[in-house]
Image 1 (cartoon, rainbow, N blue to C red):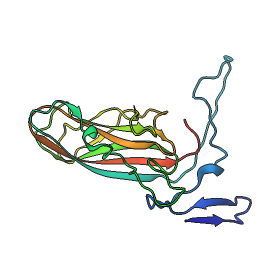
Image 2 (image 1 turned 90 degrees about the vertical axis):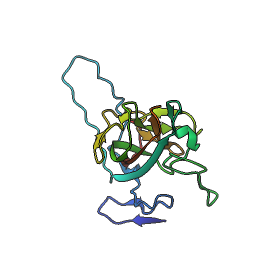
Image 3 (image 1 turned 135 degrees about the horizontal axis):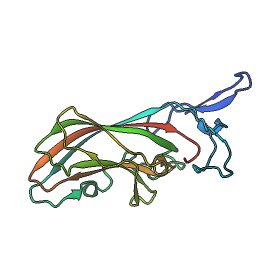
Image 4 (image 1 turned 180 degrees about the vertical axis):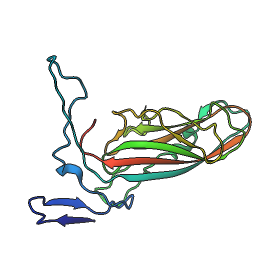
Length: 205
């Protein structure tokens, strides 16, 4: 569903209202004339210089609760592989002819990510979770965040230390995936809540 906003004193624009997959109310960022690519590199010339790129957008939140368990004797592994994409944010779906077969229905960027431990049972220092950008093929992964430790007490908040400024842009048909690694330290389970702050965008970083 969409809403067309008109007659706003030379600021008329179309605004997407509700995304049918996520239920989010999201603005269409294509009118953001301020958002241009600056290349991310220093300018040559040995002269005083400053440039600023500004983007405007309404942030939205992805909140996921993840329950994982490592069986006794299992090798250290990325448990995501056991779920065959079950830890992806955007599921495979189809409804009409213009629907995507997999991945995000719109382009957006990850601004921040943190994890809250809900229940930790006999954790290991090797237990981690990492936010990944998954290509349209559903297999190729690129790390967005560093691997965040799950070896913490209940209700502890663990924030990512790094965000890759290329991988953080999730394009149309790409996906977000939670890669969880539990060490081979006997049968133990971990339940976490992951909160990802995002924003619609029109250009890569």
